[in-house]
Image (cartoon, rainbow, N blue to C red; front, side, top):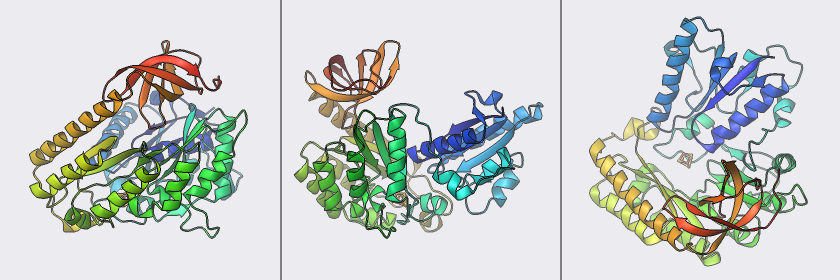
Length: 434
Ligand code: SF4
């Protein structure tokens, strides 16, 4: 049987795309192999959010070229965010790649793998769901993004916002539950945009409500969602998170900067005050909710004062997690064309370190509060007698136990670091999946 291997870079959306492509290839009789040297088809699913991710894909392509030149016989497909509407430049630069496919446009890869197939493409993909690789799974519900932030390549590569029908999403979640999934993470570049383009009047809260009813022995125990965009995060959605027991009170809401002038240059579409008003609304309904955020340092023209305003915001809000990144110009974006990358690399590095130190401090403080108490954990992995899972707030927990995969358990916390909790099993709240 023909073999394939997919190497995935980047975000959860890419991971979900890879699982879906793998499911499609399997339906057509192909077998997935763990080592790309055993594969007749090698797929690289790329990310272009930062130059570093692109460089990793290019490095791998260089290795594949050498292997080809040494006589190995296999085909190469590249998909994901480095592939834009036109591929001329990529084709010139990497003539040894057999096919290029834009995000979620898997058909060119199927054409390469199985040119003769007797199935309508629309139906084929609508009925193809990725097979989960554990008790947690990602479910893309809205593709693309309409926000066009100045620095971001995503709308140019993933296109405009497109929501999947409610019934399709719930069917997929039901399928995942029957295959042992206990926690789904609903994905969108801006997840609350879900439903804006549907006639049925649905929104993200409609999906939460539907998933609450996927019960029984093969039920979903937890629902997560990311990534939040402050202006689309309505009171109705916040209320649904507060009221529905399965929805984890864990928000991933990038702020990107704590300075209104920078937010305007970024074209983020909200002010610091509007962002903080959303935080207050969340904490008004759920005082213990976890809020994670993203920050970009060194955006074109970012002054010391503007950066200090970001630090002040982070200190005021006390986020649970802060993901920080240094600005990296992406060809094709508004910022690339109009805003010179004028913050020196060493300044970006210093600012990054300042934010990372703030994050380590706040994560350590939050985790210390849990010492001696118990936390609810969904067990996601087991290795060498140890289990690993996450709390409802997304903290990583390690504890000594086996044969608990997929179970919801209580763990007494004995030790903490800023990045994880360690403890011992206190109670099993549900049965394990396997
Ligand atoms: S909201 Fe902005 S940063 Fe996020 S994907 Fe859309 S354009 Fe990119």
